Image 1 (cartoon, rainbow, N blue to C red):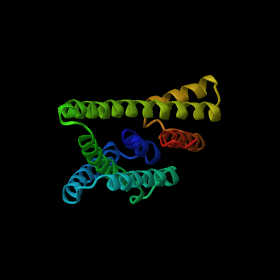
Image 2 (cartoon, helix red, strand yellow; image 1 turned 60 degrees about the horizontal axis):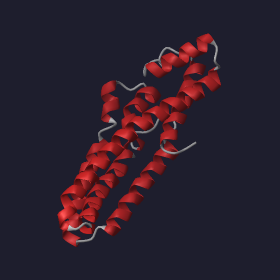
Image 3 (cartoon, rainbow, N blue to C red; image 1 turned 45 degrees about the horizontal axis):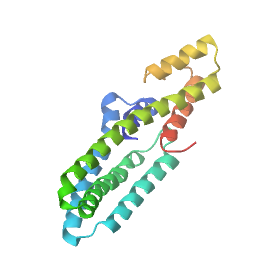
Image 4 (cartoon, helix red, strand yellow; image 1 turned 135 degrees about the vertical axis):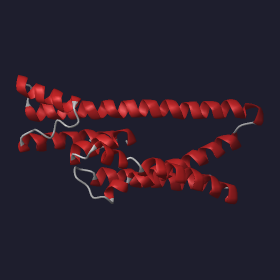
Length: 193
């Protein structure tokens, strides 16, 4: 989801690249705070399982809010919805690390933690690439369904797929179709149909 946030604001609100990039900021800030707070809470309480459940719930609630509210232009407060999701991810990273450390025998700990972090990185790469591909596919399919597959329509579809700012010069009716199609693609990344 985070890999698509800047593009979302460029396409739905015609935000400048700088403003679109600012909308990404809550995610890494939330992740860092979540990891630090999670580490401190685990260190103080020596418990991590309940914190894992809380973190998962926080992520889920945030993604549900994004699913329900991000349907085009959104308020500044709604643009902060990725913060609690990332906070939850940071908490989860801390709790998962402690959980793996507690469950593995000491001789296997270094290998297990290495595989754990490698798996996370591979998952992030696949997730970012897969979500972008899914968004693009749904966006294209929706555009073709609504605009048709004539030569002029297909050129418009190609322009919209290849250039984030192609929305700007379109007639209002086509711009509305493009916006709806993009939002459907974006929501498909969250699991919505």
